[in-house]
Length: 71
Image (cartoon, rainbow, N blue to C red; front, side, top):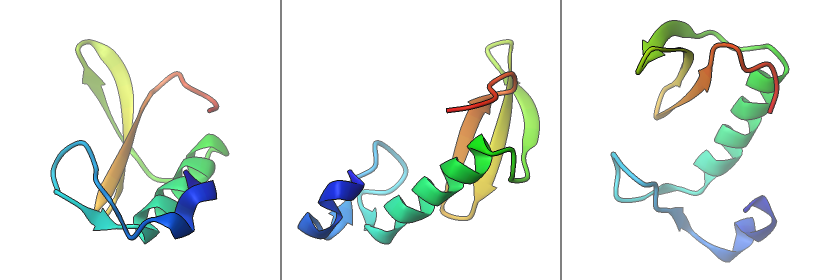
């Protein structure tokens, strides 16, 4: 999607907001890289019995399995 960044003005997420500014795509991309490299603060929890980590970043959050160590 980043390869098409200049072709659109907004993103339409699957829930919570009808559209968001496209710069959020770059913010999420940078966040996912940080998480994959072991950086970022998170809260631990479970989802349907599966241990997870939830990383909060203001207007969005990223949820991973607690045992996930890379992309």
